Image (cartoon, rainbow, N blue to C red; front, side):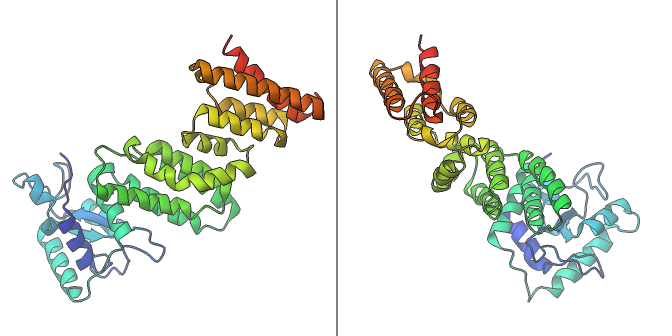
Length: 323
């Protein structure tokens, strides 16, 4: 038994909600000032056999139709389902009609990016996308140090819980892009941003990953030069799918900038040294380049410099996998 809410159903439901909970007397908004989605879609006649007010005669399409849905805050959604004796079908239908009549001439225009998140979440991923959006917005507004630290651990859990199923439609891509923009708000907090972007890229389908990676190229290139010792930055750099030879050339060029222990760790992560021997021509070119560079550094700087030790490390890695 799956969900299949049409866009027409969702747009009409949210428009006539007036962005307010439909429970009589409740003034809770459904999308708050920080664009956190609070509202929940409740079924008047239950969605499943064990749900409140379930009607076995209804078809799945009828259960998911606009006429059987009502938007409420989480508290009152729980109330009507837990206390089903006091909230029968007729009472909820009357509440829906009265509430929506109030906003017929003052309909709510839900922002497109939020609608895309809701549309994707209710039809595909059991609210994980909506949950990620909400918690990202919540996290950016926290001020306490300990609370923020604790929330960050939970935020990583939420991002890691994202679920996507193929094929990915244009609507789904728009919704995923909204999460990308939510994460982008945190760009000033570089370490947090880098870690979340990596989690995000690891979760999204391969069919659309390239489009998001391309947006990050300038940022990653710049970050890699300034924060080379950050393991997350080096992992991001690897995501750019540069050739192993171009990465090795970059390492050689920048080998004079870093302590040997840092350089050893990053250089191991970034290059598949074995792949560099697949072409005899490329192999010979790299071999000559590395030895000539090492010789030049010894002559001009000596063998005790970090620069010499770093390039010597690259020589060793390259030779060891090609013996």
